[in-house]
Length: 526
Image (cartoon, rainbow, N blue to C red; front, side, top):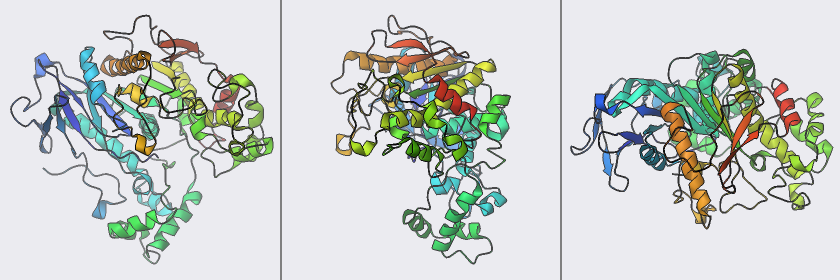
């Protein structure tokens, strides 16, 4: 799981009884809700009368006013008891007592286009803290606790969002990368049980089908045992309880000083009951509308380097050290499904000439294996999810983001994460820092870049508000509507280099390779 730092925050925005809420924090999964009708509910409690307050089930929270955004911020709102002390490595417990991802701009834009929304970013436990796994952990029923943190936060929203002027029946869950995977896990949790926690989902570069191969406990047990040994818990009858009661510094030092902190979600037969590929095939998922998309060149982030021969390609595809792996009997077919045809390379010939030569360290087959790497991790399962939604008659809107931001060369292309600044309408580049290797994605770019950000931000806000990404004031002139997905139908392509900023395309690129990946989902252990 990506380790995004998060904060549970709420803020308000607006005048004339038009109240919206947002966050100003990094997030992995966000839940959004359209506001109640202001004519019925009026402004949130405390708005406009000193420090803003909201009365929730467990007491009252007090915010602060931001003059920069003309918004009221509610920061660090708890939705669960802190997972410390005896609650470490336990399922989250309800309360029983009294910047790359800056949502301020999309919320402000939602007001401007007449589609005001509420934004909530949530914190959940990561890595070992949230996904520790072993026979002991499974036996105690404390698996996938990071995902259970998310689930509890959604219950908290159902109980409390009305206190901030929100409608609990209009929640959309939204995430990017690990956050998008998190949305997928919530859509398929408990075999797709619909607990009425949300009415829509948005997944940017992540899907209901795991982007990793699930590993069994035989893989995780040595890591768990290594942690137990490193912390002198070996002789404890209950080693998990021993870890639970270690001083924080002792446990954290053990994790930071070893390779013992790489735990990710597991197939536990409970929260994650089955392979999601089977669930989607059988229709066992929460049937709510979705936006699901990926970037053109995801593979430059996820493909291997140093692959020079077909044999090395096969070895990569079958290695259980890879993020996604196959048995060797299946991996032998992968090079045939991902040939060297120029039109199938990543980055594609529209971005980089077919005869371009990468450094030798990248490997002779780099652009070919990058195509496979991006498809097997992100893109194939995007297509598969949209096909499953369409087959079940549930609206899905699929996209391909195809705009290279400032600071990235064509050799990297439209890689992972690059749509984020556009979706959040972050045209000032807040959170980007040249000193740390990133620059404002809009630096020295034409007005079409900021226009695309406005279009994408508005489309997302419109979908959150009324489940229609096309229904908003001020849509870019000449831009075609985003078509609802049907099997074999179309993506929308977001591209700042075309006059309309978007165009529809048949979702058929690399059809044979992607179909092969989808058909072998079980061989990929997902």
